[in-house]
Each structure stands twice: as structure tokens, then as C-alpha cells.
Length: 191
Image (cartoon, rainbow, N blue to C red):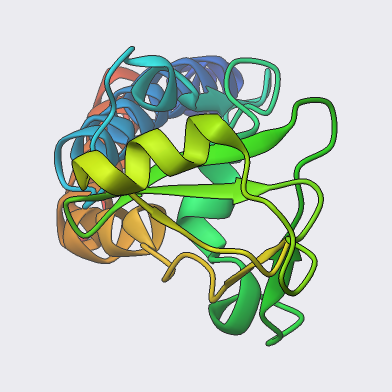
């Protein structure tokens, strides 16, 4: 069997460029698939769409590394939805919420409207007329402690689930990309 040395040398010179370009292109598509999977399969409700838009991907210029990530510049709260907060987060501790700039906090929880005044009511003291009216109408439940204890947000590891779901497809895509690049270079592909 005769080997054409010039053809083999030309194939070796061509291989790094074609392999790098093909790997970069296919890795970009694979990371885009992971990004789309993460955007589709999270458990939180995104009203404005910013949480979805903060899930992004990138590939290095050499095409050897790709990642899907949460961009804090778009929506800072998405990382907290992913990793959890309070009892479920890194600190494993509930936290208290106080009114800072206004006279009271107002929020809905479990279908009921809650108001938390900045100043707790002094025992036997007069109630704020606004709170009296709301209590009489049954609109609000007044919490007179001056703070609310929040347990936190349970984590939703949508990026991890997306990577796990896409792993076999990413590996198959990259295997095919390497074979295609080697075939373009005139070399035999791998299995």
C-alpha cells in the first residue's frame, strides 16, 4: 500500500482549521439547544419575560468550551429562582421583611391581602383609620408585628435539568461534528 505523503501532509494542515470551525459551530448549536430547554422547562412564572431572556449561552472563540448561564444584567432575580433563597438557599435561614420607605407593606398571599405597618400598634392604642376600614370590609388581614418572616423561594435548577436532558444530544452532535471535520480534511472519522 502506497501512501501519498504530500496529500497526507495537506490533510493534516487542513484538519485543525476545519475541525475547529466545525466544533465551534456545532457547540454553539448544542449550547443554544440547552438554553432553549432551560427557557422552556422552568417552574417559575415570568410576566415580563426578562427571566427567560436572562438565560443565555456562549462559546469560546476556539470552540472548545461552551456554557449556558444566567446573565445578571438582564434580570438579577433569575439566579435566586435557580438557586433558592432563605431556608432553601445557601444560608438555610428564613429572613424578616420590614417596611422601609412607606407606612406599610402590602402583599397578597394565599388569596388574602396582608398589610404590615411600619410601626407596630401599641397595646390599647388607636388603630390607623385606613387599617380599620380595611379590616371592617374584610379586605385585609393586618399583621401588627411590624415585620413578616419569609421562608424563601425553593430552588428551580432549570439549567442543571436542561444540561442533563441535552447531554446525549450534545455528545452525539459533537461526535458527528468531529467525524465530519475529519472527513473534510481527508482523514478517517472516529466511532
